[in-house]
Image (cartoon, rainbow, N blue to C red; front, top):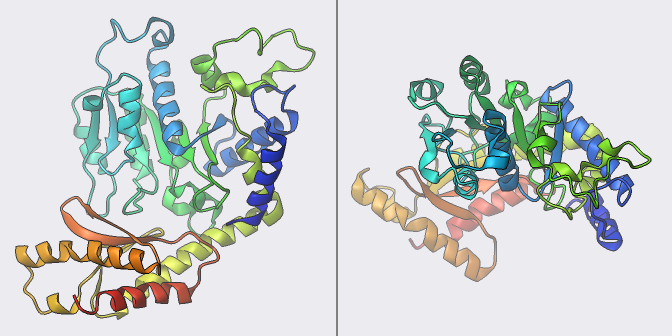
Length: 390
């Protein structure tokens, strides 16, 4: 919980505004423009455009449709009929919203080509180069959902430039590292992207939902792609500068002032305060990793580079067992049992999942600035306690 964000939500719930034209929501519209401009600076662009959306999944869908519109503008009016087959490339570790967006937009999930990743979950640029079909979009990920991996954006951008492809970076999870001088290197090369999804409601705790799509193009591409020019809202002969009527850049009409939560929090904490929040979360994740290494029975899946700490707990009965199919089959059953016990006891809640041939493992994602080292110790102690008879 961020208290500044909470106060902002009290205000917006009480005022019940909708952000589509300057005349009905002047302050919140200007706030959104100011926040987008600042976020664009952190991405590393000199100029750009953007809009706040109800979720990173929607931002990814916006970007996919925008890339397709840039590739073939006539699709807006003529639709899919008569068009050649359109394909897009994404990491096999990308968020599932890419498949949903392809389905929703009529591209088809079979036309999403998943590029192989290395053992750390990063897209392999050489595998991207090998693909035969000509895509209209490449989607890289900065902070994958499970492993917290960051694709090599510079190398992917080289390939996209060579082939004239739109590069979208889904930084919904990892984008907040841009605020940190210490950790922004994780997103090296992001300034070469054509569009970026970034969710301040994740690590920066701006309150759900608070998600921006940022676009490098500043020629009005976003508006050209999405505008319907509703005459009852977006009259061109108003007495003020109608470029402030940003609602026509959105697929929505009524839209919440989500940027205000981030704006108020940013004003209160300053960039330094937000940077400390990111640094603290990642330092806490690092503490948890070091504690896992010290304890018998705990085994890291891999050395994390972000806040996703993935690990197995090997209970006493399996510790002397030979590494083989039977061992992994039994270990696969451990995490669900521990999860059931912690839920029924009510002591904590921790996610688990299998992933790319790896049996069920725990995944602790550290983002709460109020969490402490004592909380990390409790997490490991509680797992040991719940599994002592396994």
